[in-house]
Image (cartoon, rainbow, N blue to C red):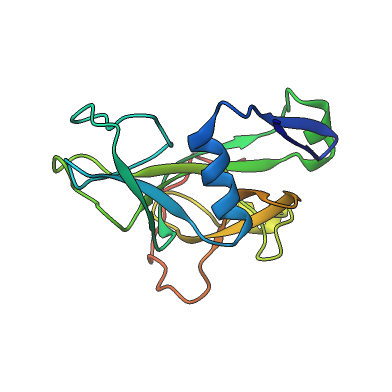
Length: 173
């Protein structure tokens, strides 16, 4: 039986054959950010997959990971494609370099996780917050419940982290 739930007026579905993603979102629903760790490579991977991208090994363990990091890149959305997001513009989509496993397996790699910028309670961040977020901003993960057993990971500013003195942003009007 697929997992289905409504999020901002849109139906989200994870098919029952999608074992890795259903497990991932179940952990998120428990407030636990877990990633797969390949048994042969010993490396974490994201997004969830059936096999390790470095060794092809299908054996892995789910490992709890501290979901904190720094903004690697971002996009400010002013023209939403989905009608459900129309009232949310502008909103920000972040690509975050996790602190864990940074620089592995090569010095230029990092685990990067996408998510919307939200307030600590999981609502889309207002424009006053958006204007102060850029590359280098320290963030932490929060989860938005869709239905029982299915939550979506998002990012919020990490209020306990030392923020960089200067963040890079695209020029603003």
